[in-house]
Image 1 (cartoon, rainbow, N blue to C red):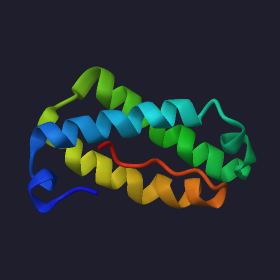
Image 2 (image 1 turned 120 degrees about the vertical axis):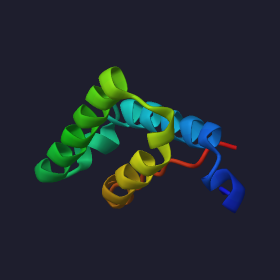
Image 3 (image 1 turned 180 degrees about the horizontal axis):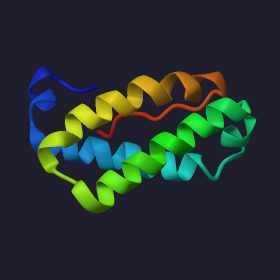
Image 4 (image 1 turned 60 degrees about the vertical axis):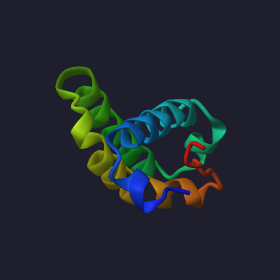
Length: 90
């Protein structure tokens, strides 16, 4: 679990963002992803496409924490629907 200090540590934010992003890439290839309703799959795909575009072209370390929080706000409830959870890196 993240501590207050880690929440404001850009290096932790980068690591947590990359971990979540990589975990989502794996999730997209699982049966869990295919279990989502079509609208939820589109939401996940659209968010991941937007993240991929940002990550590939406009990536900034100081934005990782905010982007991760925004991504988790949308994605985590959808993952929970199919029993998939991404744990924070240790």
